[in-house]
Image 1: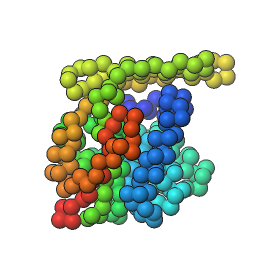
Image 2: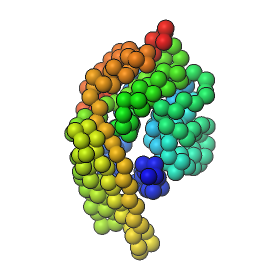
Image 3: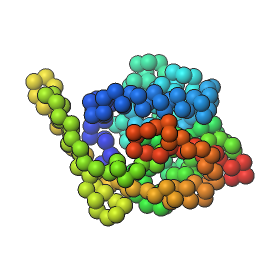
Image 4: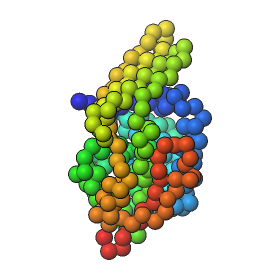
Length: 242
């Protein structure tokens, strides 16, 4: 099975903007604003699940030193192209969150925009937070969101030149099959992209337990700043002794 989103990375940004309209840009801006309050620039930031650079690019513009981590090379290729066009010095690393990589310590790690739902078992969840703990300096922070059950639903968006159909099918109480078809009109014809993979719902208690095991202490619930997202947002600090 291919890496999620690899088949339509070139249309990923367009698909989400056309699916969620102004809310997409509002959420991005709100997240950047939150990051600046949690850890003002200049600072070193590692963005796990960076995708096409939704956060990495504006953070680099704001004065952060950013390393963008994502398991999908096609998504990172889009990010690299945008960074090059804007002359932004973003380092891209192609690996999963649970795969440790060598880098100087970071002040802040990011795990937002539903990254957790791609982690399918306890081992992956624990390894991911351990990787984040290894990446940030003692006393450094992790900003994460925990998707609620309400996000695990099917939906579609239809326009004269764009069709997106998402089917989320329960396989167990916590595991779901995500199937997506996107059609984009180009030069009088239609481009079609399909994607299929598993996602998982995580109870907050499971997430907090894994954070604790990795040496993180949850400091603050930032959910009131992100009303309408369907996720809970938290800041956790890496223990000095971890």
